[in-house]
Amino acid sequence: MWRRYRPLRIISPIAFLLIWEAVVRLGEVNPLLVPAPASVLRTMFDMTIDGRLPWAIAVSLHRVLQGFIYGSVLGIGLGLLVGWFRPFEDAVDPLVGAIYPIPKSALFPLFILWFGLGETSKVITIMIGVVFLVLINTVTGVKAIDPVLLKAARDLGANRRQTFMKVVIPGALPNIFTGLRLGAGMALILVFITEIEATKAGLGFLLWESYQLLLVKQVFGCTIAFGILGILTTWILQWLEKVLCPWRRV
Amino acid sequence: MPIVLHIKDIRKVWHIERTKEQVVALDGISLDVERGEFLVLVGPSGCGKSTLLQIIAGLENPASGGIELSKSLDGHKETGMVFQEYALFPWRTVLENIVFGPEVRSVPKVEREANAQRLIELVRLRGFEHRYPHELSGGMRQRVALARALANDPAVLCFDEPLASLDAQTRKVLQVELVRIWQETKRTFIYVTHALDEAVLLGDRVVLFTARPGRIKEIVPVRLPRPRTITGKQEVELLEYLSERIRDEVERSLKAEGLT
Ligand SMILES: Nc1ncnc2c1ncn2[C@@H]1O[C@H](COP(=O)(O)OP(=O)(O)O)[C@@H](O)[C@H]1O
Ligand SMILES: [Mg+2]
Image (cartoon, rainbow over all chains, first blue to last red; front, side, top):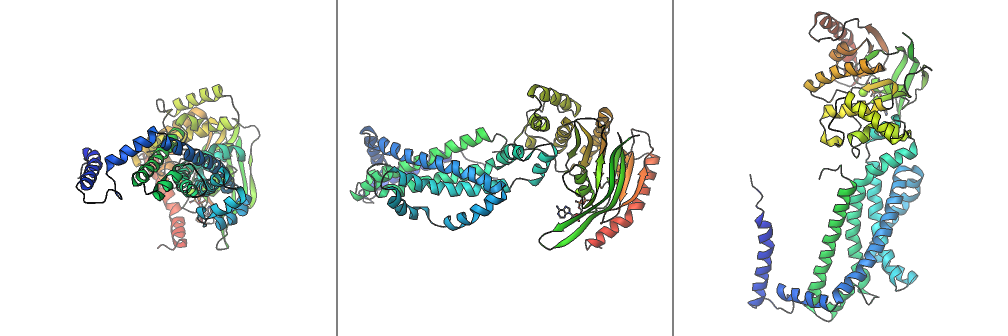
């Protein structure tokens, strides 16, 4: 049996960075295209000190959070109704079926035409992307509830409302979290896309501007910042799931 | 003994939407259940035992016929169900599962939790109140399910093969426990099983069902003193009699399923 060799998990990324650094310093690759890790770190540090990076992150995060929260609330609410009440399913299903296959980024131009160049069009694009993932997973969660649990609730005297509150919602929660995780990933993708055009702030804007000015180190720095945002949202959602679903084996 | 439950000429037909088939699950079931008795229902698989329990519990409606529960019931509720697959709420701890019934009936928190503590004592789960179902063994889960049903203080408790997914050792222990709890609570137990030894060990009366459509083939009174042992002379005789009587039905039901 192969025992897990823990130190390797730390050694391997460090080794990767060291080799990268060495390759650049030895002049094997063009530092204008692939800058050394140390110099990227340095650039990120400078961008943090002069405030450009924190400001960009704050602006993007604000858009992401708005879109994510509106989208999640709408997705969970609609999802529970669609999953539990037949008429809602019949009403909403065809709409979801028609809109879901459209890449949400393709809706952005329309939203600019309708809502202008400001925040609204960006937040709505992100919200639409989040809504569908959360909605679909919430519906799945409701439908996946073991029918014998619904029967047990009824047998114990729960009416339909109580069954909904005390069985359907907690029963769907694990799948809802799956939707939220996927939604968070989608929100980050969409915030980047909506910041390429029609804005003067945000992490996506900073990245794209750096690219157009051929400031490769800044491009790397912004990309890494996006990665860190992704990791942070995953962590936060994992923590929230642990708090809200303590019965789940992890 | 007064009658607690009057089952009158029940017929149940399942309509299978997809194939447009009609399955007659029960036909002409009439039965009087005495107050406080331990009534065991046995029959080949698919003969409609679960269907009958669900009708008694009000979870399904019969096509014709009906049930009548006596007006002067013990307890707060008419029936309570214990399912084979436990049907515990995974997101609720042992204690939270047990209080579910009183909670939806808006019994004050202090009262329902005090009552739950008493039941935890009864089913011997002291020390496990705050575990989640997945942190318990199968036997413990089934005891939680029993306590949860008892928390509603039902006049009639329905059991649908509650021990069928447990190992032989745990089954034996829980059979003894069930009889003890039945004696302590003085409630009416209607108990479905396909294990004849269980019927002999537990029942005051054993109702034998025919293969589908389920009809009552025979009602066998069990006049043996408790505690019973499955190796006792009279128990063995009764077991042999029951297996003799049920053999044809099992064969018929296997044939209907295309086996043998
Ligand atoms: N919800 C249902 N829909 C359609 N047919 C069912 C349903 N429940 C049970 N049946 C059918 O009714 C018959 C009796 O089932 P059941 O009561 O579960 O038998 P038992 O518990 O004795 O094994 C079986 O043929 C079964 O397939
Ligand atoms: Mg059954």
